[in-house]
Length: 48
Length: 567
Image (cartoon, rainbow over all chains, first blue to last red):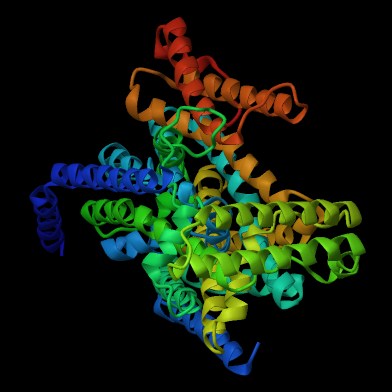
């Protein structure tokens, strides 16, 4: 039972390491920036 | 409402409640009840986070906000994705490492029991009242427009939530929220389709966007640095960041959602999901409101959207009848001018803009006279706009679906709140100060009783909310009064490791007192300030005063000397 838990924990840790979180954070930031740029373009389009 | 609407409404709500209760019937221990045995995947967490934040008023009020003021409200969410990143990097790993049940539990290890209890108390104060308003706000709108009994509506919403939250705890809340989000988004897409369907044949979606843009509804971003403008790019990025950090990082109703994840990765992915989806979702809801505005360019809107029985007598006043007649006349002229422009027969859009302004002014004048004639009339009617459209333009059956959507939204956020209130009371007070033994069954019973207790309190607040004129605003202000202090304590905990408990406790008390003073000065017209700034001021103040005090105390050893209220 204990052994099984250790295997699961190690799988979890491995899984955690295999995710490139930096890429996620940069992706999310770039996505936010793109949305803001798009909104500014729309605002200027009708603001003029 | 037809029988088919009633059928769809009741069957949707009962199915969700029964599903949540049945799926979680085997909960036997406190960890399962409060954290769902850490079994949720990232999708459930992400949807649950979004469902907790989006209350019924979000779906009723946001389209109305866009109808009145355009898409600018979206800016308040600009800081949210950044907050998701900060929470994911700094907050989440610590919560996971310490295996906490509540966010405030961590503060005892980092500072001491006094800081933990103070912060938990501030949370219970603000969220306890807010839970009642989450029920009351949609109930008042539904009862006004559908002539339902207000008390009964509050009791039904509160009662249904209590059933599955008490029975299944955190897991029931997360599982039902997943389906509630499906109903909510399904309802919004259906509504969007019918808004476009209500346009004349020759007006398409892009024409609608063009008309809305020319009438000033598509000015989404305001890059000015004018502090009197509530929604700007900068207030959205900075104010929105602080607001989101405090709400998602330190409010137990949100923290509990992602602490139930089956792994750190699942919780992080849930937060990323929220960061990615929130702005597009709010953009869509606002767009629905803007399209309702366009629809009412071709379908005559009522002059006010919240004319209830109580105001009917006032509405027979000759002055009001004259204003309404003029309003209808202006509408006819505008509709003719807009149709002619749209068909290419005229290129004079300024005429349409002028008539729209005229129509808006007449609406304001009408409301002013209404207030003079009927002191109970509340002139802010934008919360009623979307539902008015639904009741007039959606076919039988789908009205029931849209009402199920509003109920689902009210229930999902109330459930999250009750669950968090019960967890905080159980873990931060009952288990800490009263339960001396580790009797799992007894702790679980107490936790369930506390959920019932908070549920009953929320219903009582909802039932008495009508006695106060501006309770909704009052509760928003109450939340802002406490959020800053709570956030400041967590910022010191995470980013200023050398600041100790004594400095933090005193700085939190000073910041809280200062926010109260600022608010009193505002109430008595000594200063002009938006309550949205309270979170920012409170948070920054706790950090700065805490650092100064720590430098004065020099050593954290002094911590043991101060007030031993709780030991």
